[in-house]
Length: 288
Image (tube, rainbow, N blue to C red; front, side, top):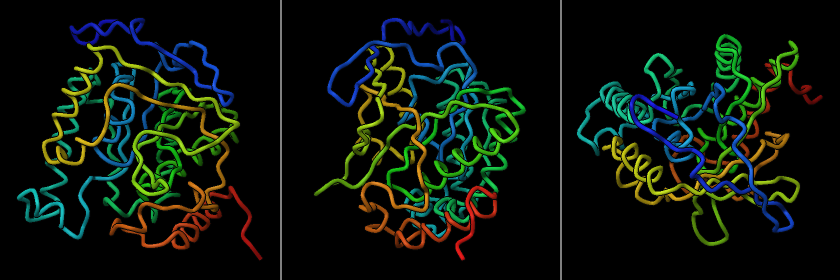
């Protein structure tokens, strides 16, 4: 498959479905050669989770501007304002997507403030439904609901809600989730799903060329180089998104963001915000 003059030989990827009983089988990813919408919270999430899957068939939607309003990250990288830091992160995103072959017209930033996505779930869901329908997309990839970063969980909730809104109009979308990071028993875990015996996992083992291309994309994110150094480039993992109850805490209630200042402090705050958004979208009944 030619991508702006660069060849990515998809058939050289080793593709395996890892099943709950430990057996494996081979398969091609369902988004191969069809338009796909990748829906993420921050610039760089798309590259960590599915960088090798991004081609000129992809629309990439980034929910936040990547610039927390507390300015801690901005000032650490030499920016005095959130606006200036957001502009830098947007430039990094465009550079990474040029490497991937994603046209700039297929990049959409909703512009929610970083670390504030959980307060905008309903608006994001409506915006996503509009993008998906307008572009005729039938396959989408988003974050796993894993209790890692609250923005990730908020985007997962919004993406799932958008697909349910579209389904009401007879428009079906296949939604897949990808893991980034979550709390383990004693440490932070990267790029693995929490246990779910009913779900089969699609693991894509990247060949040397795909790994090199993904490293080149990651290198575009100069402000995130320290954070990104902790992620592997050899494998990308996906599964059909289960029918999550977003008012129930993920990862057996072990929330990484309760250990960090990332916009939400507690799972109870998440449950309240998610519940309000789903009620607003008429996707759950208000509790009496």
